[in-house]
Every structure is written in structure tokens, then in C-alpha cells.
Length: 340
Image (cartoon, rainbow, N blue to C red):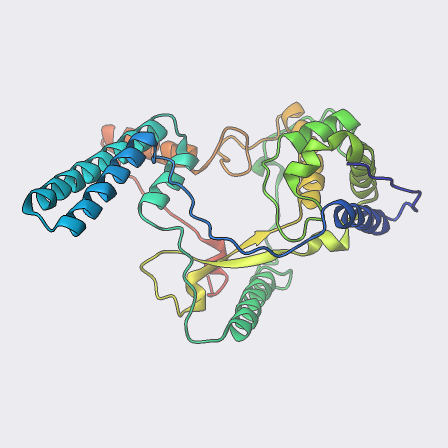
């Protein structure tokens, strides 16, 4: 792919717009969008050549029985049908057993979701698509506004409360993180290649195509990233997101908006800029020993699984020592709807 990026001013919004326009022009020239209709029948991953042969044999015996109407042919077809069903079950069992044995926590939940058919999206059925999208947008926007208002500076906070030095552990900061440094092309390349190939409709280039032509676009992407993090300006276009409402639990009423959580898909360039900043923040926190010991979210090699293991281990140790254990859980987003 040959992308020719001309000179552009140092406004990060103009730089990103120029990058998107050039990329789209090249795509329109060499791979113009077109509509094609075709019947897609994806083959399940457990469907191998043995299963295919068993299915073909079943169809052959079925056609033979339908043509002859003989009892012997009917029995042969039924016997082959049972054999085919057992072969499918055995193939499924073997495939998912092998997948689960080598899967981590995230992959395990994904496999379980597939087996339980939880990937089907359920939406309210009381409105037309246009009305439904507007109602969801209004609901999520209002929820965010209420949360922001509930934690604003004029909330009910004791004005006599003050912080004392003994409330914090003494920390010696070697170097203050005053501003972000510029990243090299090698660092930006590592960030890009370390991301998954997920894309959304906001991307001017599919992620896989961008990676295959990384040498062509890397200088301009590095310039955009460095301009954004050094100037402290996040491009306006990257502040957009495609929001999909997802039902929290399959057993909840799908006509209630409060039972949905918003899942946002953002442009790939926005993810690169975010990672460019968070890499430097993490380096600063690790160098100055600022990481919270018991933090599990947004921390390398930590997740909800490690948090649950910590809580379970503490409760088990307390019960072994004949002590009482109390667990207090706080949902901040839910608590903001009430007077706490």
C-alpha cells in the first residue's frame, strides 16, 4: 500500500483528519467499497472430515430408503443417523475439552458463553430501532450526568475533614512525571503490534491492514501520538464511540433500560494514544513504588480472578483462626443513585 502524506500543520485534529482522508482515498482507489450478497454457512470448529463423511453416508442411506421404501433400508438409515449423532457429540466433547485445558480465565468464560448460547444480543421489543437507539442514548447520558453530579465538589462532604501526614505512607519520588515524553517509532510499533486485530466502523483502515503496512504509516502515526501526548490534546474525532447495549444477565427483564450496560467501541488510533500514555504512567509508578498492593484492575498480571483469590484466601485464613469475617462491597456507580 502506497500512502503519500503531505505536509500538515501541527494541530493534532488536522493531522488525524489528514491521515484518515489519505487512507480512505487510497482504499477507495484500490479497494472501492461494494455490496455483495452471499450465503454464509460457517463450519463449526469441531466439524472435521470424519463428521463430514458420516453425514454424507447418512444422506446417501436416507435417499436410498426414500426411493425403495424398504424396511431394511430404513433400519440402515436409522442406524447411521444414531452413529452420526454420537460422532458429533464425541467430536464436540473432544474439541471443547482441549480448548478448556489450555484456556485462561478470559478464554474459559468465552467458551462457556458459547456453550450456553449467551452471545445472542437481546434488546427491548417495545420500540422501533430509531426510537430505541435514541432512548438508550438518552438513558446512558443521563446516568453519566447523575453520577458526575453526585460526586461533584459541592456534594455532602464534611468541611471540617482534613488530611494528616500520618494518613499516608511516606513515599520518595525519584523523578516527577511533569509531562509525557515523545515515543520512538520502535515504541509505537510495539504498541500497535501488541494490540489485537479488532476494528470498528470509526477506523479508516482495518487493524490487520494497518499492521501489514506498518512501515508505511508508522512515521505519521508516531507524529500524531507524540503531538497528542505532549500537547495534552486528545483528537475530537477519537472521542466518539459506537455504543452497544448489552444485557447484564440473561434472566433480567430486557425491556428495562437499567438492566443494560454500555459497551463502547472506539477507533484504533485512540487506543494507541491511550497506551502511549499509560505505558509512561506505569513506568513512573513502578520506578517510584507507587502501585497499590491490593489493586487488581488495570494492573499487569492482575484481574478479577486475583482479587477473588485474595478475598477467598483472607476469609479462609480468618475462619481457620476462629475469627469472624465481614465482607463489605461497594458499587460506586449504583451508590450514586442513592443518599449514602
